[in-house]
Length: 396
Image (cartoon, rainbow, N blue to C red; front, side, top):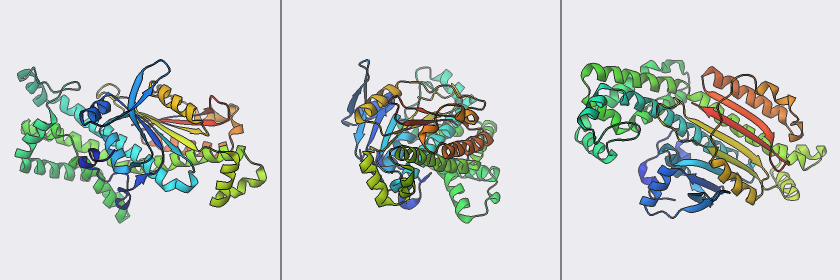
């Protein structure tokens, strides 16, 4: 899975510079949506065939590892419907897992920003006028001017586009008030985030800005700058959400291991050699993290939603079935209220360090509510009855 996606460029959101060329060295399965499947078929890629219980065929990849840059591009281009990563030992691979979770958060958050920007472009006077004059080549959620044609136009107007990008960067940076950031690394990361969003923006945005009259161009640019500034102000919550999600996954692994050993051995999990010995003795098959991304239609809900579910000690056959069956399910509506505050009312104390998971979830929920990020979380018993399933549903 190299070559095609590596040519697309990867940027730097969510990963440090020296980490971008690294591989995620875990077995993973990827189920593509229709857009992703069509793209790889056009480029002659061999796809793995999955089959659901009712005979429906889905296509994607089964990989032993994948480059971070490759995975990031797949998420950003909206190709992935479901991704399943199997981690044999979370404690030994904490940083790599954190990088992969951060990649998911930042890539999908970027999609949310771009969708919001494109929605404002669709409503512009210039697009309405274009659609009246070109009924066979309308611009909208279901139709678009071919990207290649747009890029040719943009290339011919390169100087104008650069001026617009510079102006967007200045407006966005000023609105986001970076002076509140005291650390130089935080300010640098903040400006990199804004610069990358503008650099990688859909060429349709600049096509419409160039074609709009000065008054509407100014209004559109102010709206885009406000959206970028708002999102730049809350990138810290994405870092926190990524870290807390990994802590939840690690807590789930500890819970599974604690169930397989006596209380006297729990302190041995911090030592790598002892942990491996305990895993081998317990025949622990690892932890599986599943990311589900429903297809997002601009203007439909106003939010990009996705789910992260964590399973422990699942047999290969169960994992294959779960991936396929889960990929056809819609993410349920987000709940409001006090679900996290009532976890202990259910009989889930058997799953080890639930109190720690409860703490992480409560903290994560509080920060998400503060920044108006939707979160629904559950901890429940797996169908096999011998492990816990932790599910987090986010909405940006």
